[in-house]
Length: 228
Image 1 (tube, helix red, strand yellow):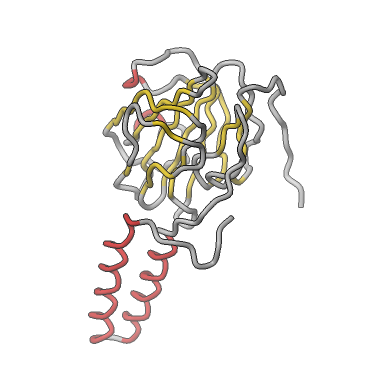
Image 2: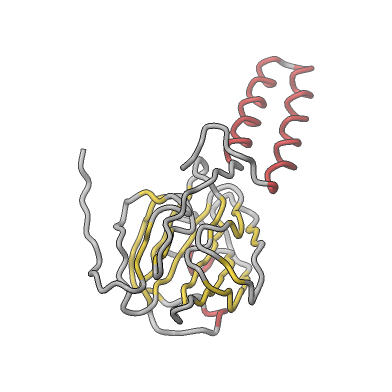
């Protein structure tokens, strides 16, 4: 659960320092510009927050890899650079706006069997074509039960850097931090064939906390509706 005074991700400190220096300089010339720069510095601190999360534990649970809103749940082919499977799988797309936590988390216990980076464009991450054309970084994680989960970090319109601290053959646990995408982005998660998502489009996710699916369950895909 996010706290008011959350820790700051280490990738954010250079930006925060830069904004702080610019703020001090602008205050020497103009109070108004200095105040605007101070607000931007505060936003930068907020953007790079890295809150602790309480991750549900259990065999087969798939946890959200990111904060944000589910914009689409559909069948789609995984990125071609993986040379993995051409079979369409259920893809859950999570859009992160500039006010969401941008730290990315591991969705399942297992071992990272493959990592593939693909340079690309910077379309708005909420668009369908972002999955095919935007800069991205993909991780395949194999669980103890033999299932494979694919997570894809996708750069957005103003995002210009995907950071991934994970490495191939690394054992991982669900909820662990593995990277961050700077300034607006998207994360796609592909479920194995026969596994139904237990979330719906429009639902807000908390990375490291919200359960997306259960690999060991036969439950059908959930439906939902907007209520006041």
